Structures are given as C-alpha cells and as structure tokens.
Amino acid sequence: MSSLDALISTPNCTLFILILLAFPLLFRLIRRPNRCPSRPPGPSKVPILGNLHQLDALLHQSLAKLATKYGPVMLVHFGREPTIVISSASAAKEALKTRDADFCGRAPNFCAARITYNYSDVTFAPYGEYWRQMRKTVTLELYSSKRVQSFGSARADEVNAMLESLALSATKGEVVDLGEKAFALTASIMFKIAFGTSFKGSMMDDKGFQKLIHEAEALLGTFAAGDYFGYAGWVFDKLSGLHSRLDRTFRRLDQFLEHVIDEHVKLHNAKDHDHGDVVDALLRVQREHVQSRATWFTRNKIKGNLIDVFLAGVDTSALVMIWTMTELMKNPSAMKKAQDEIREFMVGKKRISEQDTESLKYLKMVLKETLRMHPPAPLLIPKVTTADTRVFDYDIKAGTRVFVNAWAIGRDPKTWEQPEKFFPERFEESSIDYKGQNFELLPFGAGRRMCPGLNLGMATVELAVANMLYCFDWKLPQGMTKEDISTEEGPGVTTFKKIPLELVPVVKYYA
Ligand code: HEM
Image (cartoon, rainbow, N blue to C red):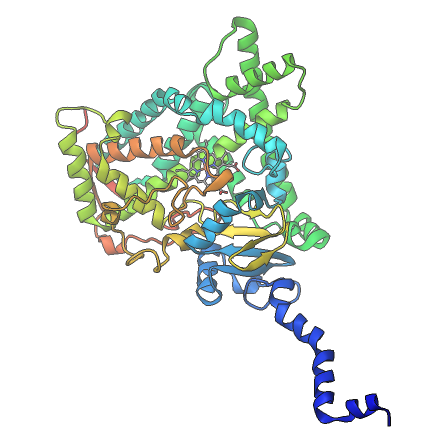
C-alpha cells in the first residue's frame, strides 16, 4: 500500500474527501434562494381553468378573500394567464412607486382593442412612445387645471338642470332613482365638454347615448375567453356572439363620432369657429401635426380619445355620487353634519359654486371616506409588467398581468381601524389623500398610469353632491328604513350598486 493509499484509507480522511466532494453541492443549496426565482404564493391551479373556479363575478371581493390566506402579493391564474394580485399599501407602494416603470404596461384586451381603434386612446395604449405623446397631449388639452376650469359653466348648467328636475319630483312627492340622475348628469356634462353641445342639439338623445356608453362599458368588463385561452377562446367568443355584439356597438359609436367630427370640421372651415370643446382641441392638434408633417395623429386617434373621455369619465364620477348618497342615508349623523356645514356656510346664497366647495371640509372627508370604501374601479385598470421585476422578495416575469386591489387596500384592517365602518372623521387628523402619494388610498391609482381625470371628475362630484345636500332633505320611500338600504355591488369592472338607490327629495332651499 502506498503512503497515499494509506492516507485515503484512514476514516478521518475519507470524511474529509466526502466533505470536499459535497462542498459544491452544499454551496449550491445555500445559495439557492438567490439564484432560483421565488414565485409569489397563491392557490393551486387546475388544468385549463387555472384558478377561475375559485373566483366569482365580484372579482375584487373574491381576490381579497384569497389574499387573506396567501398574502398581499399573490399569484393566481386566469386560464393560462398568470396574474399577480397586490393587496396591501406597502406592496402597492413598491409596485407603483419604487418599480413604477416595470408596472405601467396594460394587459391586452380584445374588446378594448376594437372599441378604442386598436388602442388609439390613452387608457388602453401599451406603455411606450405613443402612450407618452398622447398622454402629454390630452393632459394639456383636457386635464390641466386651466382646462378643467374652462369647463366650469358646462358643469354648472347641467347640475342646475338636475336640481330643477329633482325640485319637480319633490313637488310631486315622487320617488327618484338617484343612480339614473347621477349617470344622466355625468353623461351630459362629458357630452358638452367633448362635443360643445347638449344632447338636445345633437343627433343622439340622452337615453340612446347613455345606453350606448353602458353597452361599451359592459363589453370592456366582459370576460373575453380569447384573452385567456388563446385561439380556442377566440373561437368560443365568436360562437357565443361576443364578436358580433362588439361589432354592432363599435359601428354605432363610430358612426356617431364620424358625424360629430364632420360637423366640427365643417364649422371650422366655414367660420374658423372653435367651441373650446375636446373635438376642437383634438382637431387643432391634428392640424398642427399636419403642418409639421407628422402623420401619426390620425382621425382614429381622435375618435379613440373621445371614447376614452366617456368610458373613463362617466360611470366613475356617477358611482362616487351614488355611493356617497348611499352612505349618507345609512349614516344620518354624517348626513346632518354635512348638511349643517353646507347650510351654515351658504346662508343667503342660492347655489353652491365650485369656489364654495373648496371651503366644505367635512364634505371633502365624506368623499374621501366614500372613495376608500367604494373605489369605482376596484382593481384599477389591469396592468402588465414591462420587464422582469420584483415585489417584496418575489420574482415577477415581464408580461405578467397585475391587479392592484384598491378595494382590498381601502378595507385593510392593518391600515384602517374598523374598515367596514363609514366614518369620515377618520380623516380629521390625517393627511392621507387620494392623489397618488398615499398608497393606503388608491381610488385613482398612482404612478405614471394614474388617472389624469381626477380633478375633472371630482369637480363634478363635489358640485353636484354639495348642491343636492344644500337644496334638499332626503327621505326614504314609505316603509323603508336605513337598514334596508343595500350596499351590495353588481358584477362588472366598476363597483355598480346592485339595487338602485331610490329616495324622495324634499325641497329645503331651492329657488
Ligand atoms: C371620480 C372619478 C374617477 C375615478 C375614481 C377614476 C379612476 C381611475 C382609475 C382607477 C384609473 C386607472 C389608474 C391605474 O391604472 O393605475 C383611471 C385611469 C384613467 N382615467 Fe380616471 N377616474 C375618474 C374620472 C376620470 C375622468 C372624468 C376622466 C376623463 C374624462 C378620466 C380619465 C382617465 C384616463 C384617460 C385614464 C387612463 C390613464 C392612463 O392609462 O395613462 N378619469 N381612472
């Protein structure tokens, strides 16, 4: 036996050699957490469906329930599509602030592609140069504070018309469907802002227009199987009639927009006339582009952005009004406090102006509390990651769909004391606001895809609610108590109130 053989045959040395051989393996095991991607936790999926069988029509609510088990960064599968669901303020902050650039894509959406002229709008446009240019343009032409102010008379006129119709119902002791009033108001305001005319002067009446917008919204909220199951899903959508329903709605919208744009062009060519509305603004931008030989600002881009104004601006603002009145009727002490504030401030005045609403501190808290409990877009607008990224310590691949559950975040007991209680006073000593800096309250989102229409929407809501509370007292229909008022939501991408809010207005100060 050689000396080397002798050495190897000793037990100590054999152990040493074994450790030496095992070292690379041990090293790999120790380093494993850093090298292997760590997936967010989530419910186990079944073939084809993924986790669809565990979700229901109130998607934000069923996702919130699952998140209590799997945590604030959760992976679920919609068919074959992996989707990350963010359900806490700190996870939302990491996604929408720290890694905002990775979380600002939009998920492909079959219905949205058709309705928005292949993503010619801002809301559904994929993140990139086109979205940047368009968002800059519409921010200047539509959403700047100067523009929001310039639409003030449209808001005042339409709010006055609504108050007049409520006063008429009050004299007859009629029950009114407040949801209907709110949608009619926001639709007529956006119509005037966009087209420079009221329904009366247009080719479409208010009911027909509202129906068309609701149908387009419903299509955006429809689960298109093609988005989640590839070609098989596309065939299913075709056979189920989704494609023809989509085509019908698109053609009606297109016909209407073509007519409105032609009218504006004619008037401009004949009289160099500018109504100061959105169509004129977009046509002016188009002319400037043509002069500088840029060709990308086509007619479809104008139509896509006009549709955006309605789809993003009508239902959202109306829903804030409806939920505010619902919560105030269920909480008479908050209703009294809000009315006392307004009526004390308004002594001797006829109508509340937009400037007046700035002084109504309690009303602003009421609206914040409503937006906390009832964000109109509870999952914001679905996003998609634009790069491989992380939230907390979880790896997320580029191209993954992302839902930020603003509804769950607004009701997170780790952030909010008694989150199910409507309690505007919680904002008395708090600086939390909904303007995208506080991730506990995200009704408008945050980061670069945050809602640019915040001021436009809230200007309408504040003016309308303040005047409704000032001019009228509100009673429940005979035989009903506040406990009978339902807060149940209907299915869809927005938090519709399932059972209409029906109230009886009683004139207090209306002249
Ligand atoms: C109170 C009413 C409103 C609420 C609660 C609301 C809420 C939202 C939310 C949650 C988003 C998605 C943000 C995200 O994905 O992170 C959004 C996006 C958007 N909103 Fe609003 N919105 C309101 C009013 C309006 C109005 C009046 C307009 C315009 C007329 C408007 C135009 C838009 C647009 C264009 C986007 C897409 C932004 C982008 O993708 O870059 N919104 N809104």
